[in-house]
Image (cartoon, rainbow, N blue to C red):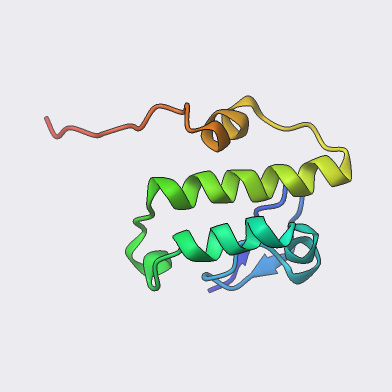
Length: 93
């Protein structure tokens, strides 16, 4: 099943274990790409469970591409990248 690239405004398909299409992924600075891969846990795309470190790394990668493309960046991405976005828990009623 193909997913959509996480770069802001992109609609290109990606594999479930890919964050972005190849062109956008190459725009991510190497240290940020390494941070995404180091926080990635194999199989997380099937389990639908990711770590907070992975979400922060992804936010930073998406921001890096958006800045290069001159796109508006949603506040929530800045919060996630800074580690300030509140973690949410769900309670069963």
